[in-house]
Length: 129
Image (tube, rainbow, N blue to C red; front, side, top):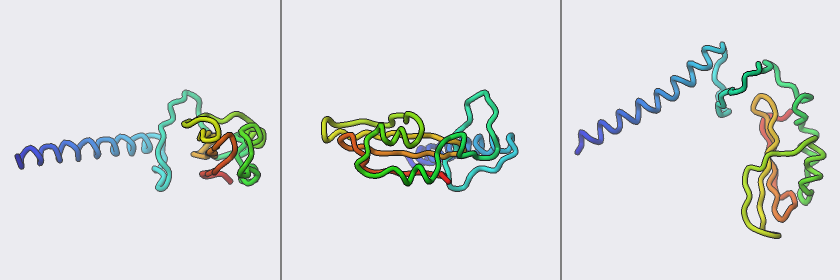
């Protein structure tokens, strides 16, 4: 029985190391180092990406993020951010309905807004300047 646990542990260790080695290989092929604090998301598009982040291309700025206030509607937030967000989750009904929308930018930028009863309840951002 102890041998079976050891084999299982070794297999799990190899799987974890194999996944991380693939991730590191992808970065070394691109001449980049993996980010230390942001999750890695593989670029699956065929178009080349810009090496410098540009807030003007994405429309995500800290000024716009700070304009989003609790109690605003989805339309008001969309108008501020310059486009429709992607719905991440939805549950409940009526005034108890909770929806999360996300606006993505470049270089791991995003703004995520939680609506409760069709009004802004909370917001969060990452890498927005």
